[in-house]
Image (cartoon, rainbow, N blue to C red; front, top):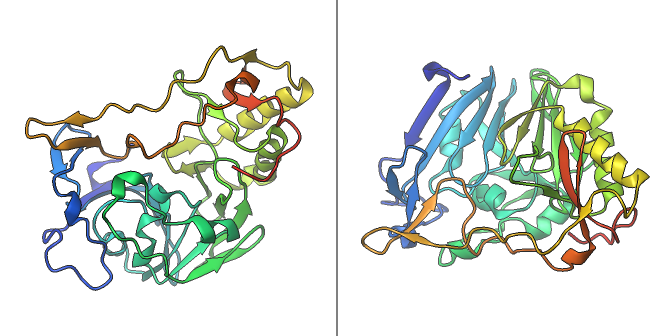
Length: 331
Protein backbone atom coordinates (compact mmCIF):
# COMPACT_ATOMS: atom_id res chain seq x y z
CA UNK A 1 0.00 0.00 0.00
CA UNK A 2 1.29 3.44 -0.86
CA UNK A 3 2.14 5.87 1.91
CA UNK A 4 1.53 9.59 2.12
CA UNK A 5 5.12 10.13 1.02
CA UNK A 6 4.51 8.06 -2.11
CA UNK A 7 1.49 10.12 -3.17
CA UNK A 8 1.45 13.52 -4.83
CA UNK A 9 -1.67 15.44 -5.84
CA UNK A 10 -1.82 18.73 -7.67
CA UNK A 11 -4.19 20.87 -9.66
CA UNK A 12 -3.23 23.83 -11.79
CA UNK A 13 -3.87 27.02 -9.87
CA UNK A 14 -4.56 29.14 -12.94
CA UNK A 15 -7.10 26.70 -14.37
CA UNK A 16 -7.80 27.67 -17.99
CA UNK A 17 -6.84 31.32 -17.50
CA UNK A 18 -3.98 32.46 -19.73
CA UNK A 19 -3.82 29.28 -21.78
CA UNK A 20 -0.39 28.62 -23.22
CA UNK A 21 -0.13 28.24 -26.96
CA UNK A 22 -0.99 24.66 -27.86
CA UNK A 23 -2.86 23.97 -24.61
CA UNK A 24 -6.20 22.17 -24.80
CA UNK A 25 -9.03 24.51 -23.83
CA UNK A 26 -11.61 22.70 -21.66
CA UNK A 27 -13.45 25.89 -20.68
CA UNK A 28 -16.56 24.93 -22.67
CA UNK A 29 -17.05 22.11 -20.12
CA UNK A 30 -16.90 24.33 -17.05
CA UNK A 31 -20.52 23.52 -16.16
CA UNK A 32 -19.91 19.77 -16.33
CA UNK A 33 -18.86 18.40 -12.94
CA UNK A 34 -16.41 15.61 -12.08
CA UNK A 35 -16.98 13.69 -8.86
CA UNK A 36 -13.79 12.76 -7.03
CA UNK A 37 -13.53 9.46 -5.19
CA UNK A 38 -14.21 11.28 -1.91
CA UNK A 39 -17.53 12.54 -3.27
CA UNK A 40 -16.47 16.16 -3.80
CA UNK A 41 -17.24 17.86 -7.11
CA UNK A 42 -15.08 20.00 -9.39
CA UNK A 43 -15.64 21.56 -12.83
CA UNK A 44 -14.49 19.37 -15.71
CA UNK A 45 -12.08 22.09 -16.86
CA UNK A 46 -10.27 22.19 -13.50
CA UNK A 47 -6.91 20.37 -13.84
CA UNK A 48 -6.32 17.64 -11.28
CA UNK A 49 -3.73 14.86 -11.14
CA UNK A 50 -2.64 12.42 -8.46
CA UNK A 51 0.57 10.38 -8.61
CA UNK A 52 1.39 7.24 -6.63
CA UNK A 53 4.88 5.78 -6.71
CA UNK A 54 4.84 2.18 -7.95
CA UNK A 55 8.58 1.65 -7.59
CA UNK A 56 11.58 3.94 -7.54
CA UNK A 57 11.47 5.59 -10.95
CA UNK A 58 7.90 4.54 -11.81
CA UNK A 59 4.65 6.39 -11.01
CA UNK A 60 0.97 5.66 -11.61
CA UNK A 61 -0.96 8.86 -12.35
CA UNK A 62 -4.70 9.36 -12.08
CA UNK A 63 -6.23 12.28 -13.91
CA UNK A 64 -9.28 11.42 -15.96
CA UNK A 65 -9.57 8.56 -18.38
CA UNK A 66 -7.47 5.48 -17.71
CA UNK A 67 -4.22 5.58 -15.75
CA UNK A 68 -1.09 7.27 -17.07
CA UNK A 69 2.34 5.98 -16.05
CA UNK A 70 5.74 7.66 -15.89
CA UNK A 71 8.95 5.64 -16.31
CA UNK A 72 12.27 7.25 -15.42
CA UNK A 73 15.47 6.34 -17.21
CA UNK A 74 18.99 7.71 -16.97
CA UNK A 75 18.52 10.25 -19.77
CA UNK A 76 14.78 10.93 -19.89
CA UNK A 77 11.43 9.93 -18.46
CA UNK A 78 8.67 8.53 -20.67
CA UNK A 79 4.89 8.77 -20.25
CA UNK A 80 2.87 5.63 -20.95
CA UNK A 81 -0.45 7.00 -22.27
CA UNK A 82 -1.69 10.55 -21.72
CA UNK A 83 -5.29 10.30 -20.43
CA UNK A 84 -8.14 12.70 -21.21
CA UNK A 85 -8.14 14.94 -18.15
CA UNK A 86 -7.98 18.72 -18.23
CA UNK A 87 -4.62 20.39 -17.68
CA UNK A 88 -1.11 19.87 -18.96
CA UNK A 89 -0.33 16.28 -17.99
CA UNK A 90 3.24 16.64 -19.26
CA UNK A 91 3.88 19.52 -16.83
CA UNK A 92 2.52 17.44 -13.96
CA UNK A 93 4.70 14.46 -14.90
CA UNK A 94 7.71 16.76 -15.11
CA UNK A 95 7.08 17.77 -11.49
CA UNK A 96 7.76 14.16 -10.46
CA UNK A 97 11.24 13.80 -11.96
CA UNK A 98 14.37 15.77 -12.79
CA UNK A 99 14.73 13.85 -16.08
CA UNK A 100 13.21 15.61 -19.11
CA UNK A 101 9.71 14.39 -20.02
CA UNK A 102 9.49 14.95 -23.77
CA UNK A 103 7.92 11.81 -25.18
CA UNK A 104 5.03 9.44 -24.53
CA UNK A 105 4.11 5.92 -25.67
CA UNK A 106 0.50 4.95 -26.33
CA UNK A 107 -0.74 1.52 -25.28
CA UNK A 108 -3.56 1.87 -27.85
CA UNK A 109 -5.54 4.49 -29.71
CA UNK A 110 -8.65 4.89 -27.53
CA UNK A 111 -9.33 8.50 -26.61
CA UNK A 112 -9.11 7.99 -22.84
CA UNK A 113 -5.46 7.03 -23.45
CA UNK A 114 -4.48 9.52 -26.18
CA UNK A 115 -6.38 12.80 -25.79
CA UNK A 116 -3.43 14.67 -24.30
CA UNK A 117 -0.84 13.43 -26.82
CA UNK A 118 -0.38 16.94 -28.23
CA UNK A 119 1.47 18.09 -25.11
CA UNK A 120 4.44 15.87 -26.02
CA UNK A 121 7.18 16.26 -28.61
CA UNK A 122 6.84 12.71 -29.97
CA UNK A 123 4.49 9.78 -29.42
CA UNK A 124 5.39 6.12 -29.88
CA UNK A 125 2.47 4.07 -31.23
CA UNK A 126 1.58 1.22 -33.57
CA UNK A 127 0.79 1.83 -37.24
CA UNK A 128 -2.98 1.31 -36.71
CA UNK A 129 -2.82 3.71 -33.77
CA UNK A 130 -1.53 6.52 -35.97
CA UNK A 131 -4.80 6.49 -37.91
CA UNK A 132 -7.09 6.33 -34.87
CA UNK A 133 -5.47 8.09 -31.92
CA UNK A 134 -6.86 11.25 -30.27
CA UNK A 135 -10.29 11.09 -31.94
CA UNK A 136 -12.60 12.62 -29.31
CA UNK A 137 -15.42 10.77 -27.62
CA UNK A 138 -18.88 12.40 -27.98
CA UNK A 139 -18.80 13.81 -24.42
CA UNK A 140 -15.86 16.03 -25.49
CA UNK A 141 -17.75 17.75 -28.29
CA UNK A 142 -16.75 21.41 -28.47
CA UNK A 143 -13.11 20.86 -27.46
CA UNK A 144 -10.41 20.91 -30.12
CA UNK A 145 -7.71 18.26 -29.99
CA UNK A 146 -4.72 18.60 -32.32
CA UNK A 147 -3.77 15.29 -33.98
CA UNK A 148 -0.78 16.65 -35.92
CA UNK A 149 1.88 15.90 -33.27
CA UNK A 150 4.94 13.83 -34.34
CA UNK A 151 4.30 10.08 -34.31
CA UNK A 152 6.93 7.35 -34.13
CA UNK A 153 5.68 3.96 -35.37
CA UNK A 154 6.92 0.97 -33.36
CA UNK A 155 6.07 -2.73 -33.30
CA UNK A 156 7.18 -6.16 -32.15
CA UNK A 157 10.78 -6.24 -31.01
CA UNK A 158 11.44 -2.52 -31.11
CA UNK A 159 13.16 -1.02 -28.05
CA UNK A 160 12.73 2.43 -26.52
CA UNK A 161 15.97 3.33 -24.72
CA UNK A 162 15.59 5.79 -21.83
CA UNK A 163 19.21 5.53 -20.71
CA UNK A 164 20.70 4.13 -17.52
CA UNK A 165 19.79 0.58 -18.50
CA UNK A 166 16.07 1.33 -18.73
CA UNK A 167 14.79 -0.06 -22.02
CA UNK A 168 11.21 -0.80 -23.00
CA UNK A 169 10.68 -3.66 -25.44
CA UNK A 170 7.54 -3.39 -27.58
CA UNK A 171 4.96 -6.15 -28.17
CA UNK A 172 2.03 -5.87 -30.58
CA UNK A 173 -0.98 -7.56 -28.93
CA UNK A 174 -4.26 -6.38 -30.53
CA UNK A 175 -7.61 -7.53 -29.17
CA UNK A 176 -9.16 -4.83 -26.99
CA UNK A 177 -8.00 -2.47 -29.75
CA UNK A 178 -6.46 -3.04 -33.18
CA UNK A 179 -3.56 -0.78 -32.16
CA UNK A 180 -2.59 -2.32 -28.81
CA UNK A 181 1.02 -2.43 -27.66
CA UNK A 182 2.60 -3.67 -24.44
CA UNK A 183 5.93 -2.36 -23.12
CA UNK A 184 8.30 -4.54 -21.07
CA UNK A 185 10.59 -2.70 -18.64
CA UNK A 186 13.07 -5.32 -17.44
CA UNK A 187 14.95 -2.85 -15.24
CA UNK A 188 11.88 -2.13 -13.08
CA UNK A 189 10.41 -5.60 -13.78
CA UNK A 190 7.07 -4.21 -15.00
CA UNK A 191 4.94 -4.97 -18.06
CA UNK A 192 2.83 -1.99 -19.15
CA UNK A 193 -0.13 -3.83 -20.65
CA UNK A 194 -2.69 -1.13 -21.44
CA UNK A 195 -6.21 -2.57 -21.58
CA UNK A 196 -5.19 -5.93 -23.04
CA UNK A 197 -4.93 -7.72 -19.69
CA UNK A 198 -8.14 -7.46 -17.71
CA UNK A 199 -8.97 -9.19 -14.43
CA UNK A 200 -12.19 -11.15 -14.05
CA UNK A 201 -14.66 -9.40 -11.76
CA UNK A 202 -17.92 -11.01 -10.58
CA UNK A 203 -20.05 -8.55 -12.54
CA UNK A 204 -17.88 -8.46 -15.66
CA UNK A 205 -16.73 -10.77 -18.42
CA UNK A 206 -14.11 -9.94 -21.01
CA UNK A 207 -15.47 -9.96 -24.56
CA UNK A 208 -12.94 -11.23 -27.09
CA UNK A 209 -12.99 -8.71 -29.92
CA UNK A 210 -10.71 -10.50 -32.38
CA UNK A 211 -10.56 -14.31 -32.28
CA UNK A 212 -9.90 -16.76 -29.49
CA UNK A 213 -6.75 -17.93 -31.28
CA UNK A 214 -5.45 -14.38 -31.61
CA UNK A 215 -5.96 -13.60 -27.91
CA UNK A 216 -4.34 -16.93 -27.01
CA UNK A 217 -1.31 -16.09 -29.18
CA UNK A 218 -1.06 -12.62 -27.63
CA UNK A 219 -0.95 -14.07 -24.12
CA UNK A 220 1.50 -16.75 -25.27
CA UNK A 221 3.77 -14.02 -26.61
CA UNK A 222 3.78 -12.34 -23.20
CA UNK A 223 4.21 -15.66 -21.36
CA UNK A 224 7.56 -16.12 -23.12
CA UNK A 225 8.80 -13.24 -20.93
CA UNK A 226 6.85 -14.13 -17.79
CA UNK A 227 9.93 -14.43 -15.56
CA UNK A 228 11.17 -10.97 -16.60
CA UNK A 229 8.50 -8.95 -14.78
CA UNK A 230 6.66 -9.00 -11.46
CA UNK A 231 3.81 -6.54 -12.01
CA UNK A 232 1.34 -5.50 -14.65
CA UNK A 233 0.65 -1.79 -14.97
CA UNK A 234 -2.68 -1.76 -16.80
CA UNK A 235 -4.90 1.01 -18.11
CA UNK A 236 -8.27 0.70 -16.43
CA UNK A 237 -7.30 -1.86 -13.80
CA UNK A 238 -4.24 -0.12 -12.40
CA UNK A 239 -1.64 -2.40 -10.81
CA UNK A 240 -2.46 -6.07 -11.41
CA UNK A 241 -0.94 -9.40 -10.46
CA UNK A 242 0.68 -11.02 -13.45
CA UNK A 243 -1.23 -14.31 -13.14
CA UNK A 244 -4.02 -12.77 -15.26
CA UNK A 245 -1.88 -13.48 -18.32
CA UNK A 246 -1.69 -17.30 -17.89
CA UNK A 247 -5.28 -17.34 -16.60
CA UNK A 248 -6.46 -15.70 -19.81
CA UNK A 249 -4.32 -18.02 -21.91
CA UNK A 250 -5.68 -21.11 -20.11
CA UNK A 251 -9.26 -19.99 -20.63
CA UNK A 252 -8.59 -19.40 -24.33
CA UNK A 253 -6.94 -22.82 -24.55
CA UNK A 254 -10.06 -24.42 -23.07
CA UNK A 255 -12.21 -22.75 -25.73
CA UNK A 256 -9.83 -23.80 -28.51
CA UNK A 257 -10.02 -27.40 -27.28
CA UNK A 258 -13.85 -27.26 -27.29
CA UNK A 259 -14.73 -24.84 -30.08
CA UNK A 260 -18.36 -23.86 -30.20
CA UNK A 261 -19.28 -25.92 -27.14
CA UNK A 262 -17.17 -24.41 -24.33
CA UNK A 263 -19.25 -22.29 -21.99
CA UNK A 264 -22.91 -21.39 -22.02
CA UNK A 265 -24.78 -19.55 -24.78
CA UNK A 266 -25.98 -16.06 -23.98
CA UNK A 267 -29.73 -15.86 -23.46
CA UNK A 268 -29.92 -12.27 -24.65
CA UNK A 269 -27.84 -9.14 -25.18
CA UNK A 270 -25.52 -8.12 -22.37
CA UNK A 271 -26.71 -5.07 -20.42
CA UNK A 272 -25.52 -1.88 -22.11
CA UNK A 273 -23.12 0.48 -20.31
CA UNK A 274 -24.93 2.77 -17.83
CA UNK A 275 -26.63 5.54 -19.78
CA UNK A 276 -28.56 7.42 -17.10
CA UNK A 277 -27.20 10.94 -16.75
CA UNK A 278 -26.91 12.41 -13.27
CA UNK A 279 -27.39 16.14 -12.62
CA UNK A 280 -26.93 18.42 -9.62
CA UNK A 281 -29.53 20.86 -8.31
CA UNK A 282 -28.50 23.46 -10.88
CA UNK A 283 -28.86 21.10 -13.81
CA UNK A 284 -25.14 20.48 -14.28
CA UNK A 285 -24.12 17.06 -15.60
CA UNK A 286 -22.15 15.01 -13.04
CA UNK A 287 -19.53 12.48 -14.18
CA UNK A 288 -17.45 10.15 -12.03
CA UNK A 289 -13.69 10.59 -12.30
CA UNK A 290 -12.05 7.92 -14.44
CA UNK A 291 -15.34 6.16 -15.26
CA UNK A 292 -16.71 5.91 -18.78
CA UNK A 293 -19.39 8.39 -19.83
CA UNK A 294 -22.85 7.70 -21.25
CA UNK A 295 -22.75 7.73 -25.04
CA UNK A 296 -18.97 7.46 -25.35
CA UNK A 297 -18.74 3.66 -25.60
CA UNK A 298 -20.88 1.94 -28.19
CA UNK A 299 -22.77 -1.12 -27.03
CA UNK A 300 -21.57 -4.04 -29.17
CA UNK A 301 -24.37 -6.49 -28.47
CA UNK A 302 -25.16 -7.42 -32.05
CA UNK A 303 -25.24 -11.11 -32.94
CA UNK A 304 -25.48 -12.09 -29.29
CA UNK A 305 -26.98 -15.43 -30.31
CA UNK A 306 -23.52 -16.45 -31.55
CA UNK A 307 -21.83 -15.59 -28.24
CA UNK A 308 -20.93 -17.95 -25.40
CA UNK A 309 -19.71 -17.14 -21.87
CA UNK A 310 -16.91 -19.26 -20.44
CA UNK A 311 -15.69 -19.48 -16.84
CA UNK A 312 -12.44 -21.40 -16.64
CA UNK A 313 -9.19 -21.26 -14.63
CA UNK A 314 -10.33 -18.16 -12.73
CA UNK A 315 -11.13 -16.21 -15.91
CA UNK A 316 -14.40 -15.26 -17.63
CA UNK A 317 -14.49 -14.67 -21.37
CA UNK A 318 -17.19 -14.16 -23.97
CA UNK A 319 -16.40 -15.40 -27.46
CA UNK A 320 -18.12 -15.59 -30.82
CA UNK A 321 -18.41 -19.17 -32.06
CA UNK A 322 -17.70 -17.87 -35.59
CA UNK A 323 -14.38 -16.32 -34.47
CA UNK A 324 -12.57 -19.11 -32.67
CA UNK A 325 -9.69 -19.65 -35.10
CA UNK A 326 -10.29 -17.00 -37.72
CA UNK A 327 -10.11 -13.23 -37.31
CA UNK A 328 -11.06 -10.79 -40.04
CA UNK A 329 -8.67 -8.09 -38.75
CA UNK A 330 -11.50 -5.80 -37.61
CA UNK A 331 -12.07 -4.86 -33.95
